[in-house]
Amino acid sequence: MVKTPQKIEFPSNWDENNVGAVDFFNRCLPYVKKTEDFYDIAGVSIYFIVFGVIAIGYILFINIWLLSYYKSYIFKRQSFKYYLCLLVGSLMILLDTYFLEIYYEHYPCFLHHLFTAIGYPTYLSAIVFIILRYYKFYYKSQIAYFNSFMEFLEEKHNEMFNKKFIFKICYTSISPKKAFNIFIFINIISVIYSILIYFVDKRVSSNGFCGTRISYLPQIMEFAFILLIFSPLALIEALKFDDKFRMKKTVVLLILVHIIYFTGFFLGALVKKLNCSVFVQYTPPGFFVFLSCVTCTRLFSFGTLKDILHVTECNKNLKVTRAGMDEMLYDKVLFREFGEYCRNENCVENILFLQEYWKYKKLFAKNNATNTKISEISDPESSIKSRSREGSIAKLSVIGRRNTLLGNSKLNEHGNTISSTTKITTDRKTSIMSSSRLNERAMSVITIPIIEKSDLKTYYSTVEREARKFYNNFIVSNAIYEINIQSSIINQIVKKITELEESSDNTEEERIEDYSTLFDDAYKEVCDNIYLNSYSNYVHMKNKEQSAQEKSKKKKETNN
Image 1 (cartoon, one colour):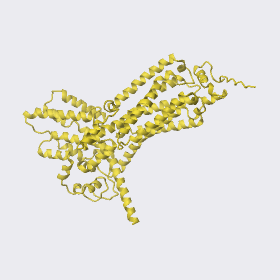
Image 2 (cartoon, rainbow, N blue to C red; image 1 turned 60 degrees about the vertical axis):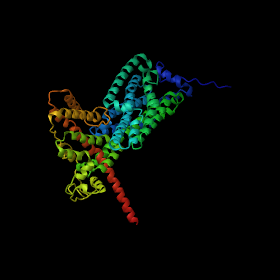
Image 3 (cartoon, one colour; image 1 turned 90 degrees about the vertical axis):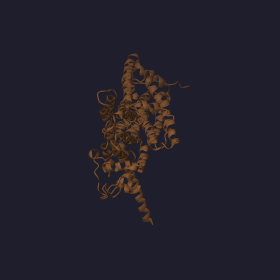
Image 4 (spheres, rainbow, N blue to C red; image 1 turned 60 degrees about the horizontal axis):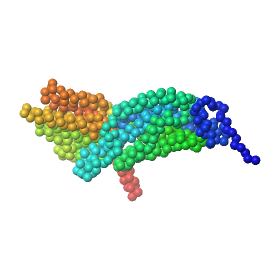
Protein backbone atom coordinates (compact mmCIF):
# COMPACT_ATOMS: atom_id res chain seq x y z
CA MET A 1 0.00 0.00 0.00
CA VAL A 2 1.51 3.32 -1.11
CA LYS A 3 1.46 6.21 1.41
CA THR A 4 0.08 9.45 0.07
CA PRO A 5 1.92 12.59 1.14
CA GLN A 6 0.33 14.27 4.13
CA LYS A 7 -1.24 17.58 3.26
CA ILE A 8 0.45 20.46 5.05
CA GLU A 9 -2.03 23.01 6.31
CA PHE A 10 -1.52 26.75 6.35
CA PRO A 11 -0.38 27.70 9.90
CA SER A 12 -3.41 28.60 11.99
CA ASN A 13 -1.61 31.47 13.75
CA TRP A 14 -0.96 33.24 10.46
CA ASP A 15 -3.33 35.50 8.57
CA GLU A 16 -4.35 33.90 5.27
CA ASN A 17 -5.10 37.36 3.87
CA ASN A 18 -1.54 38.54 4.53
CA VAL A 19 0.26 38.63 1.18
CA GLY A 20 3.66 38.18 2.81
CA ALA A 21 2.52 35.16 4.86
CA VAL A 22 1.06 33.48 1.77
CA ASP A 23 4.28 34.12 -0.18
CA PHE A 24 6.36 32.69 2.65
CA PHE A 25 4.13 29.59 2.88
CA ASN A 26 4.30 28.89 -0.86
CA ARG A 27 8.05 29.51 -1.03
CA CYS A 28 8.96 27.17 1.84
CA LEU A 29 6.28 24.50 1.33
CA PRO A 30 8.61 22.14 -0.62
CA TYR A 31 11.16 22.21 2.22
CA VAL A 32 8.97 21.39 5.24
CA LYS A 33 7.51 18.11 6.49
CA LYS A 34 4.78 19.43 8.76
CA THR A 35 2.99 22.67 9.57
CA GLU A 36 4.97 23.21 12.79
CA ASP A 37 8.15 23.53 10.73
CA PHE A 38 6.95 26.92 9.49
CA TYR A 39 7.02 28.28 13.03
CA ASP A 40 10.58 27.03 13.48
CA ILE A 41 11.72 28.66 10.25
CA ALA A 42 10.08 31.98 11.10
CA GLY A 43 11.52 31.97 14.63
CA VAL A 44 14.95 32.92 15.89
CA SER A 45 17.24 31.26 18.43
CA ILE A 46 18.19 32.68 21.81
CA TYR A 47 21.81 32.72 20.64
CA PHE A 48 21.05 35.31 17.97
CA ILE A 49 19.07 37.41 20.46
CA VAL A 50 21.97 37.49 22.94
CA PHE A 51 24.51 38.07 20.15
CA GLY A 52 22.44 40.99 18.84
CA VAL A 53 22.25 42.71 22.24
CA ILE A 54 26.00 42.33 22.80
CA ALA A 55 26.82 43.58 19.28
CA ILE A 56 24.57 46.66 19.53
CA GLY A 57 25.94 47.45 23.00
CA TYR A 58 29.54 47.13 21.78
CA ILE A 59 28.94 49.34 18.74
CA LEU A 60 27.18 52.01 20.82
CA PHE A 61 29.86 52.00 23.52
CA ILE A 62 32.84 52.25 21.14
CA ASN A 63 31.31 54.88 18.86
CA ILE A 64 29.98 57.10 21.64
CA TRP A 65 33.39 56.92 23.31
CA LEU A 66 35.01 57.85 20.00
CA LEU A 67 32.58 60.72 19.36
CA SER A 68 33.48 62.19 22.75
CA TYR A 69 36.89 62.98 21.22
CA TYR A 70 35.34 65.01 18.40
CA LYS A 71 37.87 67.80 19.00
CA SER A 72 40.83 65.48 18.53
CA TYR A 73 43.08 66.24 15.58
CA ILE A 74 43.18 62.55 14.61
CA PHE A 75 39.40 62.30 14.63
CA LYS A 76 38.91 65.55 12.72
CA ARG A 77 41.46 64.38 10.16
CA GLN A 78 39.48 61.18 9.57
CA SER A 79 36.28 63.28 9.32
CA PHE A 80 33.79 63.36 12.17
CA LYS A 81 30.91 63.35 9.66
CA TYR A 82 31.86 60.00 8.13
CA TYR A 83 32.00 58.27 11.51
CA LEU A 84 28.74 59.88 12.58
CA CYS A 85 27.10 58.52 9.42
CA LEU A 86 28.69 55.13 10.09
CA LEU A 87 27.17 55.09 13.59
CA VAL A 88 23.73 56.32 12.50
CA GLY A 89 23.62 53.92 9.55
CA SER A 90 24.80 51.00 11.72
CA LEU A 91 22.17 51.64 14.40
CA MET A 92 19.36 51.97 11.88
CA ILE A 93 20.07 48.72 10.08
CA LEU A 94 20.97 46.81 13.27
CA LEU A 95 17.84 47.79 15.18
CA ASP A 96 15.72 47.13 12.11
CA THR A 97 17.38 43.74 11.49
CA TYR A 98 17.19 42.76 15.16
CA PHE A 99 13.48 43.46 15.59
CA LEU A 100 12.68 42.06 12.13
CA GLU A 101 14.25 38.71 13.02
CA ILE A 102 12.61 38.55 16.46
CA TYR A 103 9.15 39.74 15.37
CA TYR A 104 9.27 38.36 11.84
CA GLU A 105 5.57 37.48 11.79
CA HIS A 106 4.38 40.93 12.89
CA TYR A 107 7.07 43.51 12.04
CA PRO A 108 5.75 46.46 9.90
CA CYS A 109 7.20 46.07 6.42
CA PHE A 110 6.98 49.81 5.73
CA LEU A 111 9.25 50.44 8.72
CA HIS A 112 11.64 47.78 7.43
CA HIS A 113 11.65 49.31 3.96
CA LEU A 114 12.19 52.84 5.30
CA PHE A 115 15.03 51.87 7.64
CA THR A 116 16.83 49.87 4.97
CA ALA A 117 16.28 52.61 2.38
CA ILE A 118 17.96 55.16 4.69
CA GLY A 119 20.28 52.98 6.77
CA TYR A 120 22.05 50.96 4.09
CA PRO A 121 23.11 53.85 1.82
CA THR A 122 24.23 55.84 4.87
CA TYR A 123 26.19 52.91 6.30
CA LEU A 124 27.68 51.65 3.03
CA SER A 125 28.53 55.14 1.78
CA ALA A 126 30.27 55.89 5.08
CA ILE A 127 32.43 52.76 4.66
CA VAL A 128 33.29 53.76 1.08
CA PHE A 129 34.24 57.33 2.01
CA ILE A 130 36.26 56.27 5.07
CA ILE A 131 38.27 53.87 2.91
CA LEU A 132 38.75 56.53 0.23
CA ARG A 133 39.84 59.02 2.89
CA TYR A 134 42.57 56.63 4.01
CA TYR A 135 43.60 56.28 0.38
CA LYS A 136 43.58 60.05 0.00
CA PHE A 137 45.94 60.50 2.97
CA TYR A 138 48.31 57.91 1.54
CA TYR A 139 48.23 59.48 -1.91
CA LYS A 140 48.80 63.06 -0.75
CA SER A 141 51.36 62.12 1.88
CA GLN A 142 53.39 60.11 -0.65
CA ILE A 143 53.38 62.99 -3.12
CA ALA A 144 54.45 65.35 -0.34
CA TYR A 145 57.17 62.89 0.70
CA PHE A 146 58.65 62.53 -2.78
CA ASN A 147 58.48 66.28 -3.38
CA SER A 148 60.10 67.05 -0.04
CA PHE A 149 62.67 64.28 0.43
CA MET A 150 63.08 62.28 -2.76
CA GLU A 151 63.13 64.76 -5.64
CA PHE A 152 66.72 63.79 -6.38
CA LEU A 153 65.54 60.25 -7.17
CA GLU A 154 63.86 61.10 -10.43
CA GLU A 155 62.88 57.51 -11.20
CA LYS A 156 61.05 57.06 -7.86
CA HIS A 157 59.56 60.53 -8.10
CA ASN A 158 58.12 59.92 -11.56
CA GLU A 159 56.96 56.42 -10.62
CA MET A 160 54.76 57.86 -7.86
CA PHE A 161 53.31 60.63 -10.02
CA ASN A 162 52.65 58.33 -12.98
CA LYS A 163 50.94 55.58 -11.02
CA LYS A 164 47.38 54.97 -12.17
CA PHE A 165 45.17 55.30 -9.11
CA ILE A 166 41.61 54.13 -9.74
CA PHE A 167 40.00 56.51 -7.26
CA LYS A 168 42.31 59.48 -7.84
CA ILE A 169 39.40 61.73 -8.78
CA CYS A 170 37.85 60.98 -5.37
CA TYR A 171 41.09 61.97 -3.60
CA THR A 172 41.18 65.31 -5.36
CA SER A 173 37.51 66.22 -5.86
CA ILE A 174 35.31 64.93 -3.03
CA SER A 175 35.53 66.69 0.33
CA PRO A 176 33.73 65.51 3.52
CA LYS A 177 31.24 68.33 3.02
CA LYS A 178 30.38 67.13 -0.49
CA ALA A 179 30.15 63.55 0.73
CA PHE A 180 27.82 64.56 3.55
CA ASN A 181 25.61 66.39 1.05
CA ILE A 182 25.49 63.17 -0.98
CA PHE A 183 24.30 61.32 2.15
CA ILE A 184 21.54 63.87 2.69
CA PHE A 185 20.43 63.78 -0.95
CA ILE A 186 20.32 59.96 -1.05
CA ASN A 187 18.33 59.82 2.18
CA ILE A 188 15.76 62.35 0.95
CA ILE A 189 15.27 60.31 -2.24
CA SER A 190 15.05 57.11 -0.15
CA VAL A 191 12.32 58.52 2.12
CA ILE A 192 10.28 59.68 -0.88
CA TYR A 193 10.72 56.28 -2.55
CA SER A 194 9.60 54.38 0.58
CA ILE A 195 6.50 56.54 0.95
CA LEU A 196 5.55 56.05 -2.70
CA ILE A 197 6.17 52.29 -2.63
CA TYR A 198 3.94 52.02 0.45
CA PHE A 199 0.92 52.88 -1.71
CA VAL A 200 2.02 50.72 -4.64
CA ASP A 201 3.19 47.43 -3.11
CA LYS A 202 0.86 45.56 -0.72
CA ARG A 203 3.80 43.64 0.66
CA VAL A 204 5.34 46.89 1.92
CA SER A 205 2.10 48.16 3.46
CA SER A 206 1.42 44.86 5.30
CA ASN A 207 2.81 43.63 8.62
CA GLY A 208 5.10 40.62 8.97
CA PHE A 209 6.95 38.31 6.55
CA CYS A 210 8.92 41.12 4.95
CA GLY A 211 10.77 39.39 2.13
CA THR A 212 13.34 40.69 -0.33
CA ARG A 213 11.23 41.68 -3.32
CA ILE A 214 11.48 43.97 -6.34
CA SER A 215 10.45 46.92 -4.15
CA TYR A 216 13.84 46.56 -2.43
CA LEU A 217 15.69 46.94 -5.73
CA PRO A 218 17.58 50.14 -4.70
CA GLN A 219 18.92 48.41 -1.58
CA ILE A 220 19.87 45.32 -3.60
CA MET A 221 21.67 47.49 -6.16
CA GLU A 222 23.63 49.21 -3.38
CA PHE A 223 24.81 45.84 -2.09
CA ALA A 224 25.62 44.67 -5.61
CA PHE A 225 27.62 47.83 -6.31
CA ILE A 226 29.69 47.42 -3.15
CA LEU A 227 30.19 43.67 -3.67
CA LEU A 228 30.77 43.50 -7.42
CA ILE A 229 32.32 46.87 -8.27
CA PHE A 230 33.72 48.86 -5.35
CA SER A 231 35.21 46.00 -3.29
CA PRO A 232 37.34 44.49 -6.12
CA LEU A 233 38.51 47.92 -7.30
CA ALA A 234 39.31 49.06 -3.75
CA LEU A 235 41.24 45.84 -3.18
CA ILE A 236 43.25 46.34 -6.38
CA GLU A 237 43.96 49.94 -5.33
CA ALA A 238 45.10 48.89 -1.84
CA LEU A 239 47.48 46.29 -3.26
CA LYS A 240 49.17 49.04 -5.31
CA PHE A 241 50.21 50.82 -2.13
CA ASP A 242 53.52 49.87 -0.56
CA ASP A 243 53.67 48.22 2.85
CA LYS A 244 54.49 51.54 4.51
CA PHE A 245 50.79 52.36 4.22
CA ARG A 246 49.80 51.55 7.81
CA MET A 247 46.14 50.98 6.99
CA LYS A 248 46.85 48.67 4.04
CA LYS A 249 46.32 45.42 5.97
CA THR A 250 43.23 46.82 7.69
CA VAL A 251 41.60 47.89 4.44
CA VAL A 252 42.47 44.63 2.66
CA LEU A 253 41.08 42.60 5.58
CA LEU A 254 37.91 44.71 5.70
CA ILE A 255 37.27 44.30 1.97
CA LEU A 256 37.87 40.53 1.99
CA VAL A 257 35.62 39.80 4.98
CA HIS A 258 32.89 42.04 3.57
CA ILE A 259 32.92 40.10 0.33
CA ILE A 260 32.23 37.03 2.50
CA TYR A 261 29.57 38.84 4.55
CA PHE A 262 27.69 40.19 1.54
CA THR A 263 27.83 36.82 -0.19
CA GLY A 264 26.44 35.16 2.94
CA PHE A 265 23.70 37.77 3.19
CA PHE A 266 22.56 37.25 -0.41
CA LEU A 267 22.68 33.47 -0.11
CA GLY A 268 20.65 33.53 3.10
CA ALA A 269 18.10 35.96 1.68
CA LEU A 270 17.67 34.63 -1.85
CA VAL A 271 18.46 30.89 -1.82
CA LYS A 272 15.20 29.18 -0.87
CA LYS A 273 16.77 26.01 0.47
CA LEU A 274 18.74 28.03 3.02
CA ASN A 275 16.04 30.60 3.70
CA CYS A 276 13.52 27.85 4.43
CA SER A 277 15.66 25.77 6.78
CA VAL A 278 16.18 25.77 10.54
CA PHE A 279 19.64 27.15 9.75
CA VAL A 280 18.14 30.67 9.59
CA GLN A 281 17.19 30.44 13.27
CA TYR A 282 20.87 30.67 14.17
CA THR A 283 22.33 32.58 11.22
CA PRO A 284 19.55 34.56 9.53
CA PRO A 285 20.55 37.00 6.77
CA GLY A 286 20.66 39.72 9.42
CA PHE A 287 23.48 37.86 11.17
CA PHE A 288 25.87 38.93 8.40
CA VAL A 289 24.68 42.52 8.76
CA PHE A 290 25.65 42.36 12.43
CA LEU A 291 29.04 40.91 11.55
CA SER A 292 29.63 43.73 9.07
CA CYS A 293 28.78 46.46 11.60
CA VAL A 294 30.87 44.86 14.35
CA THR A 295 33.84 44.45 12.00
CA CYS A 296 33.67 48.08 10.81
CA THR A 297 33.42 49.28 14.39
CA ARG A 298 36.43 47.18 15.37
CA LEU A 299 38.62 48.15 12.42
CA PHE A 300 37.56 51.77 11.91
CA SER A 301 36.03 53.22 15.08
CA PHE A 302 38.05 51.25 17.62
CA GLY A 303 41.23 51.66 15.55
CA THR A 304 40.80 55.45 15.49
CA LEU A 305 39.88 55.50 19.19
CA LYS A 306 42.97 53.44 20.00
CA ASP A 307 45.18 55.94 18.14
CA ILE A 308 43.58 58.87 20.00
CA LEU A 309 44.03 57.20 23.40
CA HIS A 310 47.61 56.28 22.52
CA VAL A 311 48.48 59.87 21.56
CA THR A 312 46.71 61.22 24.65
CA GLU A 313 48.71 58.87 26.88
CA CYS A 314 51.95 59.73 25.09
CA ASN A 315 51.28 63.44 25.58
CA LYS A 316 50.71 62.90 29.30
CA ASN A 317 54.02 61.10 29.68
CA LEU A 318 55.98 63.07 27.08
CA LYS A 319 59.34 64.14 28.53
CA VAL A 320 60.23 66.56 25.76
CA THR A 321 59.41 70.23 25.36
CA ARG A 322 58.48 72.06 22.19
CA ALA A 323 62.11 73.13 22.06
CA GLY A 324 63.05 69.51 21.42
CA MET A 325 60.82 69.38 18.39
CA ASP A 326 62.20 72.73 17.21
CA GLU A 327 65.76 71.44 17.34
CA MET A 328 64.81 68.29 15.47
CA LEU A 329 63.15 70.27 12.69
CA TYR A 330 66.31 72.39 12.36
CA ASP A 331 68.54 69.32 12.09
CA LYS A 332 68.65 67.99 8.55
CA VAL A 333 69.45 64.39 9.51
CA LEU A 334 66.79 64.16 12.21
CA PHE A 335 64.33 66.05 10.05
CA ARG A 336 64.72 63.44 7.30
CA GLU A 337 64.32 60.62 9.81
CA PHE A 338 61.16 62.25 11.15
CA GLY A 339 59.97 62.63 7.55
CA GLU A 340 60.33 58.87 7.06
CA TYR A 341 58.20 58.31 10.15
CA CYS A 342 55.57 60.78 8.90
CA ARG A 343 55.51 58.97 5.58
CA ASN A 344 54.44 55.80 7.37
CA GLU A 345 51.81 57.75 9.30
CA ASN A 346 50.55 59.57 6.16
CA CYS A 347 51.20 63.07 7.50
CA VAL A 348 54.16 64.30 5.41
CA GLU A 349 52.04 67.17 4.11
CA ASN A 350 52.34 68.83 7.53
CA ILE A 351 56.13 68.98 7.55
CA LEU A 352 56.17 69.93 3.86
CA PHE A 353 53.85 72.79 4.87
CA LEU A 354 56.48 73.95 7.38
CA GLN A 355 59.23 73.87 4.77
CA GLU A 356 57.20 75.85 2.25
CA TYR A 357 56.01 78.28 4.91
CA TRP A 358 59.59 79.08 5.86
CA LYS A 359 60.43 79.70 2.19
CA TYR A 360 57.35 81.89 1.84
CA LYS A 361 58.43 83.97 4.84
CA LYS A 362 61.78 84.68 3.16
CA LEU A 363 59.91 86.98 0.80
CA PHE A 364 59.37 89.44 3.63
CA ALA A 365 62.88 89.59 5.11
CA LYS A 366 63.93 93.16 5.91
CA ASN A 367 67.63 92.95 5.13
CA ASN A 368 70.50 90.57 4.61
CA ALA A 369 70.82 89.91 8.32
CA THR A 370 67.21 88.96 8.46
CA ASN A 371 67.63 86.94 5.30
CA THR A 372 70.36 84.99 7.05
CA LYS A 373 67.99 84.18 9.89
CA ILE A 374 65.31 83.08 7.53
CA SER A 375 67.81 81.00 5.60
CA GLU A 376 68.59 79.22 8.84
CA ILE A 377 64.95 78.33 9.17
CA SER A 378 64.64 77.24 5.55
CA ASP A 379 67.89 75.26 5.62
CA PRO A 380 68.09 73.25 8.84
CA GLU A 381 71.62 72.05 8.11
CA SER A 382 73.08 75.54 7.78
CA SER A 383 71.12 76.55 10.83
CA ILE A 384 72.80 73.88 12.93
CA LYS A 385 76.22 74.84 11.59
CA SER A 386 75.77 78.57 12.16
CA ARG A 387 74.32 78.53 15.67
CA SER A 388 76.69 78.72 18.61
CA ARG A 389 74.84 78.55 21.88
CA GLU A 390 75.96 77.94 25.42
CA GLY A 391 75.56 74.22 26.05
CA SER A 392 74.25 73.88 22.49
CA ILE A 393 72.74 70.57 21.52
CA ALA A 394 74.25 71.15 18.09
CA LYS A 395 77.71 70.41 19.49
CA LEU A 396 76.68 66.85 20.16
CA SER A 397 76.93 64.09 17.61
CA VAL A 398 73.84 63.23 15.58
CA ILE A 399 73.22 60.24 17.84
CA GLY A 400 73.66 62.41 20.90
CA ARG A 401 71.27 65.00 19.50
CA ARG A 402 68.73 62.32 18.73
CA ASN A 403 68.82 61.03 22.29
CA THR A 404 68.61 64.54 23.70
CA LEU A 405 65.72 65.56 21.52
CA LEU A 406 63.84 62.37 22.34
CA GLY A 407 64.09 63.01 26.04
CA ASN A 408 66.62 60.32 26.97
CA SER A 409 69.56 62.60 27.71
CA LYS A 410 70.35 63.91 31.17
CA LEU A 411 70.76 67.41 29.68
CA ASN A 412 68.10 70.04 29.48
CA GLU A 413 68.05 72.70 26.80
CA HIS A 414 70.52 74.89 28.73
CA GLY A 415 73.01 72.10 29.26
CA ASN A 416 72.15 71.59 32.92
CA THR A 417 71.78 68.11 34.37
CA ILE A 418 68.34 66.93 35.35
CA SER A 419 67.13 63.79 37.03
CA SER A 420 66.09 61.07 34.63
CA THR A 421 62.87 60.79 36.57
CA THR A 422 62.08 64.50 36.25
CA LYS A 423 59.07 65.00 34.06
CA ILE A 424 59.04 68.10 31.91
CA THR A 425 55.51 69.37 31.93
CA THR A 426 53.70 68.81 28.69
CA ASP A 427 50.23 69.82 29.58
CA ARG A 428 48.46 70.56 26.30
CA LYS A 429 47.54 74.11 27.26
CA THR A 430 51.01 74.90 28.60
CA SER A 431 52.70 73.41 25.54
CA ILE A 432 50.67 75.41 23.08
CA MET A 433 50.80 78.69 25.00
CA SER A 434 54.50 78.42 25.83
CA SER A 435 56.99 80.42 23.82
CA SER A 436 57.83 78.06 21.00
CA ARG A 437 61.16 78.95 19.46
CA LEU A 438 60.01 77.48 16.18
CA ASN A 439 57.19 80.03 15.99
CA GLU A 440 59.45 82.84 17.17
CA ARG A 441 62.20 82.16 14.67
CA ALA A 442 59.84 81.65 11.79
CA MET A 443 57.63 84.66 12.49
CA SER A 444 59.14 87.29 14.77
CA VAL A 445 62.04 88.07 12.45
CA ILE A 446 59.72 88.74 9.53
CA THR A 447 59.25 92.36 8.58
CA ILE A 448 58.48 94.05 5.32
CA PRO A 449 61.55 94.95 3.26
CA ILE A 450 62.28 98.49 2.17
CA ILE A 451 61.93 98.52 -1.61
CA GLU A 452 62.27 101.23 -4.19
CA LYS A 453 58.98 102.30 -5.73
CA SER A 454 60.18 101.28 -9.16
CA ASP A 455 60.56 97.70 -7.94
CA LEU A 456 57.45 97.65 -5.78
CA LYS A 457 55.09 96.40 -8.47
CA THR A 458 57.41 93.57 -9.40
CA TYR A 459 57.87 92.66 -5.75
CA TYR A 460 54.13 92.80 -5.10
CA SER A 461 53.43 90.54 -8.11
CA THR A 462 55.93 88.02 -6.74
CA VAL A 463 54.34 88.08 -3.28
CA GLU A 464 50.84 87.73 -4.73
CA ARG A 465 51.89 84.85 -6.98
CA GLU A 466 53.68 82.96 -4.19
CA ALA A 467 50.77 83.47 -1.77
CA ARG A 468 48.32 82.09 -4.32
CA LYS A 469 50.65 79.15 -5.02
CA PHE A 470 50.96 78.39 -1.31
CA TYR A 471 47.20 78.72 -0.89
CA ASN A 472 46.47 76.37 -3.81
CA ASN A 473 48.97 73.78 -2.59
CA PHE A 474 47.92 73.59 1.06
CA ILE A 475 44.75 75.49 1.97
CA VAL A 476 42.15 75.20 -0.78
CA SER A 477 39.74 72.27 -0.57
CA ASN A 478 41.28 69.13 -2.11
CA ALA A 479 44.65 70.82 -2.53
CA ILE A 480 47.45 68.50 -3.59
CA TYR A 481 49.03 68.78 -0.09
CA GLU A 482 45.82 69.62 1.75
CA ILE A 483 46.44 70.10 5.49
CA ASN A 484 43.87 69.47 8.18
CA ILE A 485 43.19 72.66 10.13
CA GLN A 486 40.12 74.29 11.66
CA SER A 487 37.50 75.40 9.15
CA SER A 488 37.41 78.82 10.85
CA ILE A 489 41.09 79.36 9.97
CA ILE A 490 40.51 78.19 6.39
CA ASN A 491 37.51 80.51 6.01
CA GLN A 492 39.54 83.38 7.42
CA ILE A 493 42.35 82.77 4.89
CA VAL A 494 39.89 82.37 2.00
CA LYS A 495 38.15 85.61 2.93
CA LYS A 496 41.41 87.51 3.33
CA ILE A 497 43.05 86.31 0.12
CA THR A 498 39.87 87.13 -1.81
CA GLU A 499 39.87 90.65 -0.36
CA LEU A 500 43.55 91.12 -1.18
CA GLU A 501 43.11 90.00 -4.79
CA GLU A 502 39.91 91.92 -5.46
CA SER A 503 40.18 95.07 -3.32
CA SER A 504 42.05 98.12 -4.57
CA ASP A 505 41.42 100.32 -1.52
CA ASN A 506 44.70 99.53 0.23
CA THR A 507 48.13 100.46 -1.02
CA GLU A 508 50.49 97.80 -2.29
CA GLU A 509 52.62 98.19 0.85
CA GLU A 510 49.58 97.52 3.04
CA ARG A 511 48.58 94.49 1.03
CA ILE A 512 52.11 93.12 1.18
CA GLU A 513 51.98 93.46 4.95
CA ASP A 514 48.69 91.52 5.02
CA TYR A 515 50.20 88.82 2.82
CA SER A 516 53.11 88.46 5.25
CA THR A 517 50.78 87.25 8.04
CA LEU A 518 48.19 85.49 5.88
CA PHE A 519 49.14 81.93 6.85
CA ASP A 520 50.43 82.51 10.39
CA ASP A 521 47.40 81.02 12.17
CA ALA A 522 47.53 77.95 9.94
CA TYR A 523 51.24 77.62 10.72
CA LYS A 524 50.63 77.74 14.48
CA GLU A 525 47.97 75.05 14.28
CA VAL A 526 50.09 72.77 12.10
CA CYS A 527 52.97 73.11 14.58
CA ASP A 528 50.64 72.24 17.46
CA ASN A 529 49.24 69.27 15.53
CA ILE A 530 52.71 67.95 14.76
CA TYR A 531 53.83 68.34 18.38
CA LEU A 532 50.77 66.80 20.02
CA ASN A 533 50.33 63.96 17.51
CA SER A 534 53.11 62.98 15.12
CA TYR A 535 56.03 64.14 17.27
CA SER A 536 54.72 62.66 20.53
CA ASN A 537 54.15 59.31 18.79
CA TYR A 538 57.61 59.53 17.23
CA VAL A 539 59.25 60.19 20.60
CA HIS A 540 57.31 57.35 22.19
CA MET A 541 58.40 54.96 19.43
CA LYS A 542 62.06 56.01 19.71
CA ASN A 543 62.03 55.69 23.50
CA LYS A 544 60.61 52.18 23.20
CA GLU A 545 63.30 51.25 20.67
CA GLN A 546 66.04 52.60 22.92
CA SER A 547 64.61 50.84 25.99
CA ALA A 548 64.53 47.57 24.05
CA GLN A 549 68.16 48.07 22.98
CA GLU A 550 69.24 48.81 26.55
CA LYS A 551 67.45 45.71 27.87
CA SER A 552 69.05 43.59 25.15
CA LYS A 553 72.47 45.03 25.98
CA LYS A 554 72.04 44.36 29.72
CA LYS A 555 70.87 40.83 28.99
CA LYS A 556 73.98 40.14 26.91
CA GLU A 557 76.21 41.58 29.63
CA THR A 558 74.48 39.40 32.24
CA ASN A 559 74.89 36.28 30.12
CA ASN A 560 78.56 37.05 29.60
